[in-house]
Length: 96
Image (cartoon, rainbow, N blue to C red; front, side, top):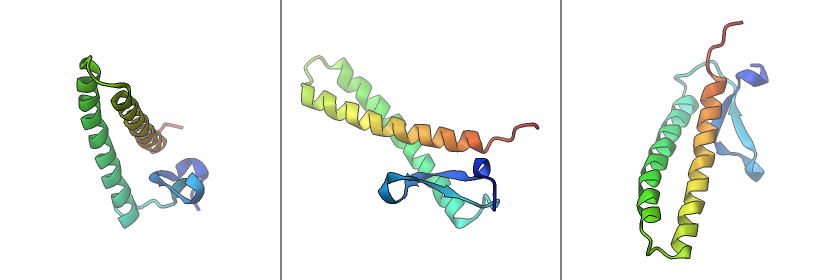
């Protein structure tokens, strides 16, 4: 079994919202490729949301409900992006 620091943090949660990890050295396996794809989608959605949120924030006529919705969506996107960054950071090769 791979050491815990070498496990890949996956971009989805398991039961009860707990993190899911993948124990494999095969970066081309099905689950690894699925995780890569989901991470890519999450990053793309975060970029689109950022553009939309800037437009909402620039519009002084937007109501508080719309602003709360944008804030909630941004918080979710930030959570996803931090998960991707953490996962990729753990997979960086570091000299011993």
